[in-house]
Length: 215
Image (cartoon, rainbow, N blue to C red; front, side, top):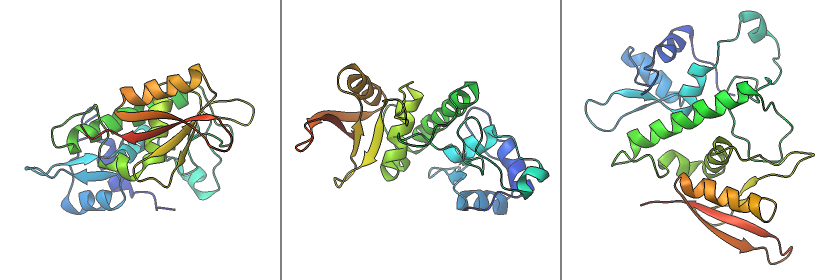
C-alpha cells in the first residue's frame, strides 16, 4: 500500500486550485506528489503541476485523525478504501454506501478525470478518454458508468459488471438485457467510449464491448 503523503505534501494538495487542481509548492514537494500519482507535470510550458484524479479525491477526503491512523480503520460508508482512496465500483464487490457521501466522491472523481482529460489530451478535449484511462480501462469505464448513475452489480441486485478482455483497449460490460444494457451503452458513448453489443457464444447472453474513442 502506498504510504500516505506527509503533512507538508497534504497541505500542498489541500491548497490546490479547487477548479483546475493547479498546485503550488517546492520542487521537491511537487516531485514527491508526482511520484505518488497525486499530481502530474503538464508537458507544455510553463510546465505547471496539477492534481491527478487521485489527487482530487485526496483533497476531497478529510485527513484521518491520529487515533484512527494508528489502528486498522474500517471501510467508510461511502465505499472508499481504508486508506481513503476512492475506488470506482466495477460490479460484484461487497456492498458499499450509496448515500450522499458516495455520490459526492463519485462526482469529485469524475470532475477530476474531466480535468485530467482537458490537461493531457493534445487539443484539450474533455469528450474523449485520455492516456490514463487507456491504461486503466476497467476503472475508467466503471467510473463513467457510476458517474452516469448506473447501478453496479451487487450480491442481491442486478446491475453492470465491467471486466477486462484479451483485446487491447477493450473492456466487457455485462448488464441485464434490455434497457439496463442499453443505458450502459448510452452512458459510455456520452463519455467518449465507442461501444458495440455482442452475444456470448456459450451463454447466449448479450454484453457490451467498449473502447476509448480516439477522435
